Length: 85
Image (tube, rainbow, N blue to C red; front, side, top):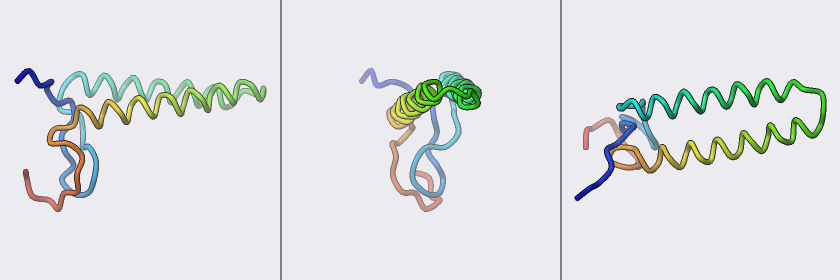
């Protein structure tokens, strides 16, 4: 009854989510890309510990991003052949 609104549209072909359809989806995508930029910057540091932190940050950010996209995709993730649900 009080189901949250979707942030991402379904893919037309294939499995997964399409582009964001709400401002929250765009904000999530922008935040994820910002975290990836920080990870890329950290990866260029010469210290081995910094690279380990960058890798851990990448894994955590990607898992969080994928989980939220999965939860907030209109119609869920399933294989689609181009027809609208």
